[in-house]
Length: 163
Image 1: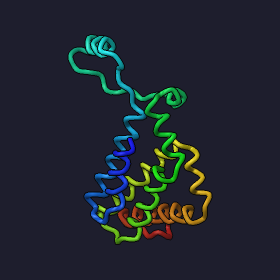
Image 2: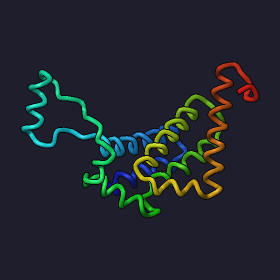
Image 3: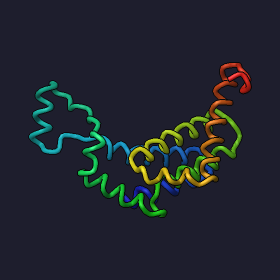
């Protein structure tokens, strides 16, 4: 997990939109692996394939209360306790850099993806919410909200003062 996070963080720190997108996708994949479960044994997989025909069933979402028993989630949670592997911190830094760039379609999509992943990370690791207790990170969050409101309204042909 550390190797995947290391590569993801390298991509998130890049100036290239393609590399940032790749880093965001890697983080999203990691979170998806933690949140989604598959049939664990061959017999379970075979049984689910028989029940649904020939195609395997899509992964089902794990209940949040059951995640604590999942070894991958426990490893994820343990890594998030330290600053070196904390995904929320890296995503906030990436968001700050993205917001400092000009507005274009690609950058806007990266900002939205980053905000989605921050939300998912904070849902899985509530202690990371304390990052927003610090004024600097709360300002980033507020700026992202204002950024989103302004750009949504400008696309709709309204000024930001009418919302």
